[in-house]
Length: 362
View (cartoon, rainbow, N blue to C red):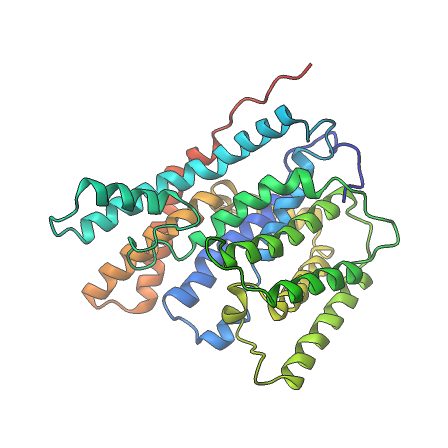
């Protein structure tokens, strides 16, 4: 889906993307998980705020273009293996440190003196495996957010493969949305049985579309007009209301239900929000982006967003545990959870900045 032969000359960082990523991470950690994990809002209305993951993967695709573009030879075995190793370390190493801490915390909290070496190894492996993410060995909210890591790893690994073809000039966003909707509808009719992981497969397919779309946007940011996104917005809203009206027994507007695994209704809902965000992004001036980038409130989420995302499991769990024991108001627990999460994320943020050297070519 490439529209350029190489990344821009100033490849690698884009302040607008960094600001967008920071805002999304702040939204997830402060609003979404406060809303759902602590019950700040009723689930129904709160679920209409669950737009964050498609934009996260869209940013992933755009960042891949800025970092890799359509670099010559990227699919050669050595280059591809080098890419997998470098990206894998950046994603998995912070995850591994977090889950080891989570496994230790579970062992302390649930210690009854009966944990054998064999059970300890099983517990550690359950956490280190991003597909199982501590299943059977968790406590409170430690693992609720870790579903994201496995599809993120897989989609990242697929980026060199799914961005090799040039998209014809006549293609419009509504065409891409219609094609992706057909795929989501089709896989929704299939249940992948063990040893396959049904949710992981569907998550990967769903979010790979958004990552590929992000790559396209970065490759040609002015290709489409606001009207193109407005059309997607209108058609997606119409589709959502038509489905809810025509099939009230089979369709729900509870997006938390629709999200795991993502179904056609969640795809239409995501299209609505992404269209709104893309239209809104055109209204942001460079001055406004600079002001946001300089904000001390946003900087932690821009510089350490992934680490803060990971450590919110411990931050929220400890705050909820202590707050419950002390009988604290839920809003006090919420503030404590946010503060603890940000603090832990900043402490461990250096892990996500570890870079392996690139493979030498030529």
